[in-house]
Structures are given as structure tokens and as C-alpha cells.
Length: 100
Image 1 (cartoon, rainbow, N blue to C red):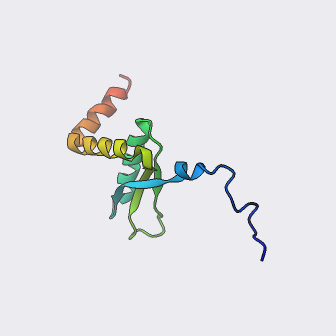
Image 2: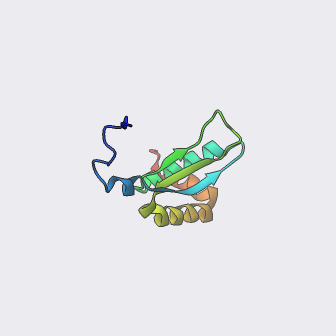
Image 3: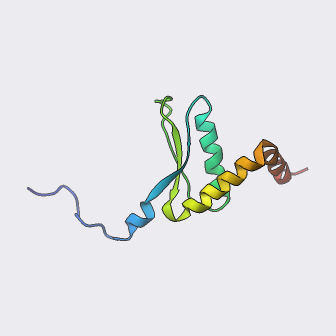
């Protein structure tokens, strides 16, 4: 039986490592999407590659933020620091970026 795929082997065998992502944040509930979007924005503003995984059609399922495996430790550290600083620090950081 013939394969429908153009090639059974990837053109770049190392590309799989770049696609190897891990979940660094997960949220469920009413504000799950907004929380996940905030975390994604935090990670991206720090130069990390973050992907939001979730579907508004299924609100009972959680939203996840994933990053490449090699960036997971840095992402987890950034999330922990942001949670420890709390909402007041987020407001101060936003105010600092706004023009007078």
C-alpha cells in the first residue's frame, strides 16, 4: 500500500526538537482564557516562544500555555515571579510603559 504523504521522513530530522513543547501554565474556569492570554503575553514580552492552546467552543476544558522544552524552566521562573509580585506589580509595570 502506498503512502499518501510526500515523504515518510522529515526534511529536517531536527525539526521535531523545535516542535517539542511542554505546558507551563494551565487555567480553567470563567477567566481561564484571559489568564492564559496574560501569561502568554508575559512570556512573549520576555522573548520566549509561547503558544495558547484552548477552544472557546469547549469552555469546560482548560486553556494551556506551552513553550519549547528548552525554554520551560525560564518560563516557569517568569510565571512564579509574576505571581509572587502580584497584581500591583503588573499595574506598576503597565503604568511605566504608558506615555504621560
